[in-house]
Structure formats: structure tokens, C-alpha cells
Image (tube, rainbow, N blue to C red; front, side, top):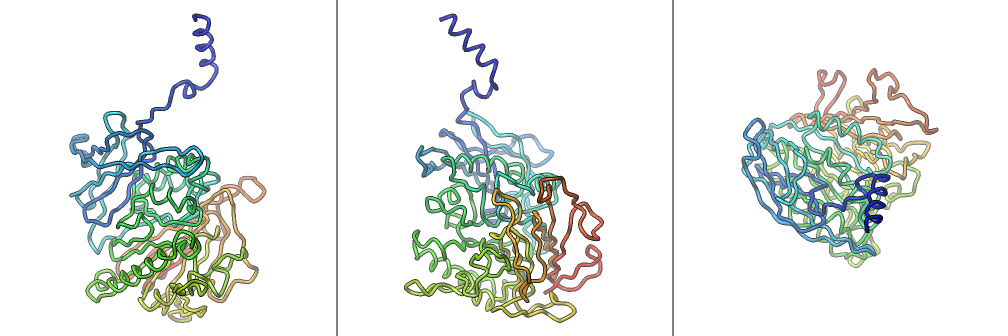
Length: 459
């Protein structure tokens, strides 16, 4: 017996200590926060692999540490893979937060606590000027934009992150372990600012169960579609995947359309549009794109844009609905590129004017930002852009959006290429831009000469 003990000690000395210590199943991980759409609130979500209590201890920045406690609940999630791995998803809602105030928190239970994180409660004023980072299609392999996003988020550059579908590549793989690793990877962003999401095609497995269980968005639709208000904007998130995965139920498509119509009608009531004139949508698969991959957005008969005639009854598309209800800005991903469109409806350009196309545009503006980095690398474009395509880039990157006020929105695209196509280090200085990364400016409401020197923003 003594010889066996010595052998075990010797063996453990040769391998990393983590392999000799059993995992602590009660330790919180994958911490992320989201805005539930209720004033003065924030939802904290995390995972354990054994059942524990769900508690958050928190305090105002500079106050007595962990002076307040909130309790929630956990739900058992069983992955659909062969191992049927079990995990517990914990959710705790913090209420009565002071708008615009910073808070310190950790989450867990007496069986284990997370690291200490901090966040700023959302400012509830319609004059609030929030800053966003937005992107889609980021995996835990080749996440080119992650490092910069981590640094900028923790430096306080953003109030909200919008992840426009496709996570991890893919969350269900290796019996859900890929999803676990990705959620741990984004904790350095998502534990500090609201991480707002919509589903993409890479979440398809087991009826989108990983997406529906891991995230905590507003409403009662398991995060598939919802809306919320921030500053002078009404933001609508929805699922384009209901047009493609009909095996999960055609009723979802019609239910979502009915909800979208009702939500847009409410947002367009004069008293609501007066205080929140911006209507912004976000969803994964775009209506338009000039990529060369034969995706839905490359086709005139796009399912998302025009609907489907091969269903009974025929499924309505979304372009007419959004145009008729005055949607200003439509955010998409899916294509592993960046593309900005001129104001467009039914394949026709409706610029505000020849000199100032984004001043008082007569149709929605589309932004496609799916190049944050994943194992599938880049997509390509057709050689000649369509008439409605204003700017295209195959660089890795993400988009910054600043909702300045009720008449100005500012967007810029950050090129974050870290290696060249050949694998060698690549300079981030692009064209005449004197910064270390390329900023592609998409002005949207009202002309101004003072914002960043050359931006034009429109209403």
C-alpha cells in the first residue's frame, strides 16, 4: 500500500495539479449579465455543475463590500449529446438599482463564490447617450476581436454589447464543453456590461437548447425574440432562424411575426416615437449582402426579406413590415465580412440626397457585422458590389455604435486583423487613417462637423 501511495504522489508530481484534483462542481463559472427590460434591474447568470443556492452579494462602488444580497433560482439543463451532461443555470435579478451608478458583485453560494466583478446600472433617461460594441459570428477558436473587446470593455468604453448570433462554433459540440469554454472566454466582457443576444444558425442543435438555456434576455420567449428601450432607441431582437429550421415548428415563425407587428405598432405610437425616435433591429441572417457564398441574403427571393411561399399558409417576410413601420437601422451578422448599405428598400436605393445619403434617408440602413473571428475564417465578396452596397471589408473586426441623442447616431467599423492571409504578422494601419486600426465611419442622423472630425449622422 505504501508503494502505491508513493507512486501516486510521484505521478501527480509529473502532471499539472489540476489533473490530480477533482473538479469543484459547485464553483460558479461563465458569469454574464443582461438587462431584463425593467427599470433599475440587472440579471446575473452563471453556471455550476452541481445544484447549489443562487445568490448575488453586491454593493455600490465605494460602499461596504457585499452589503446587499439577492437570491434567485437555478434550472437544470441537460445537454442533448451522448453523455447527457448536466449543468445548473443560475439567475438572480438585482432590483432597485440606482441608474448610472457602479456596483461591485460576486455570485454563487456558501459552496463557492465567483471572482469579484463590477457593472454600471443602465441610465434610464431618454437623453442617455449609450455606447455599444456589436458583432456576430465569434467562436472560441480564432476569436480575432476578443482581446481588444476585453480591454475596451474593462476600460469602460461600452455600456452594452450586442452579439448578433453564432456563438462558440458550436455550443453543443463535445457534449456542450465547447459552449462552456466559450462562455468562460467571454466572461471577461459579459460579466461587466449587459451582453444582449439573438440566435444564429450555429445554435440550431437540439432546438436551440443551448442558446435558450444559457442566456437570459427580456420577456418570456427563452431569448428568441424581445425588445427593450435604452436612451432614445427602441431595440428589437428577433430570430431569423424560424425561417429555416421549420422542423422545430412553423408556428414559431407566425408567432414571432405577430409579435413583431404588435411591438412595432406600439413603438410607433406618437407618444412613444416622440421620446424614442430610433427603432433599431438586430437579427442574424441579413436580407441583403454581396457575398459570394450563395447564402439567403445573396438571393432576390430571400426568405427573411420576402418570406416563404412553400409553407401552408405562406410565411410573410420582414422587409415590408420594417419599412412600413419606419425602422431606422437594421443590424445583421452571419456573413463573415463587414458591409454597410445605402438606405435600401426592395433592392432600390433611397438616399436622403446625392451629397448626404444618410441625412433623412427614405429607407432603413443595413449594417452586416459578422467578422469577429471564428474557425470558418473569412467569407468573400462578388467582384462588383451591388448598387445598394456602400462599403465592404473582409477584415476581422467589430462595430462601435454611439447613440448620441434623438437625432444623431454614429457608427464605425474597427479592423482587428491580427495576422495576414499568409499567417505572418500584419500591420493594423490601414489606408490614410492615422490610427492603429481602421475606422470605417457610417454616419446616420443629421449632419455635424464636430463629431470625430468628419462624421455625418442622419435622421
